Length: 290
Ligand SMILES: CSC[C@H]1O[C@H](OP(=O)(O)O)[C@H](O)[C@@H]1O
Ligand SMILES: Nc1ncnc2[nH]cnc12
Image 1 (tube, protein in one colour):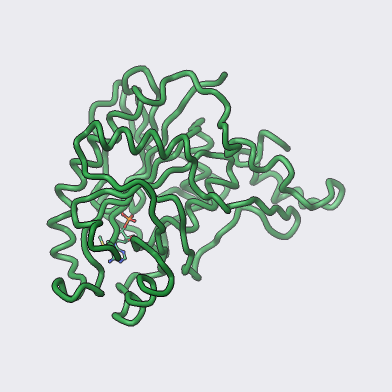
Image 2: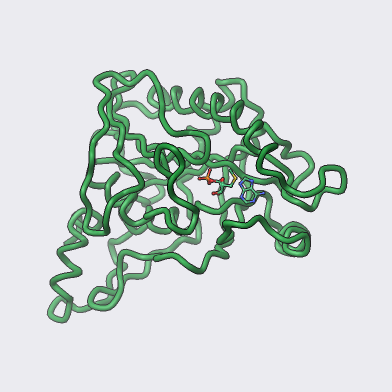
């Protein structure tokens, strides 16, 4: 039994959370550079929390320049065990309407201009992301959303695009019709992969803001419309987050799905040829096994 520390990565429109006891913004240094911003730490209903605005307060980082590795390392360094991503997304499904939430369970990674792993030359590791989200944490997010009276869909495939431009109409139709994606955003990859490498449980809550550009009655995606929907969504997102401590509890049992042991057999590089400089950088992420 260990202690739950809930990490929340707030996406577009969510730059802080309220109600934390002993709240303070902490600067965290990491071997991967600076995180997007300081991390807001505190306690909610007896459970430790750490909140990180993905784009930084004031929305400084674009989806391609978010320091994903530093963000996940910083949360790990602060003792976070469970990461909840709360993100603005477009929808490819009529029934997943703006204002609805989706607890995502799969991803298609179309990003190409980001660092995607903590590992590399001198320490090669291959973790499985066949099931990239944690079912236990996702179930808590679903229940929290339902308790908060949010219309929430259980499961969905998130297409992660590079951005920052939105999709073309041809791409939008292809993702929806041929690829079977349900929602689209620009940030959950490589975040989810890195969380798995860092042995963190990860769940993703998509807050629908628009129908991307495929919908014949809604035309193309428009950022001013997105921002209007985002305001209401952000309030609901915070309501969801505030219910998580009661659902997860302070005492934490090992993840039944093995998220917290993902590196157990993942490292291939023999101990005698590992790069000491890279090994030093992995102190937080892979500290449990190194
Ligand atoms: C606000 S429009 C596009 C922007 O919003 C999403 O950000 P996040 O996933 O951090 O909520 C999307 O991925 C884009 O970065
Ligand atoms: N349609 C869309 N495409 C990509 N990212 C988004 N974030 C919010 N809406 C989006």
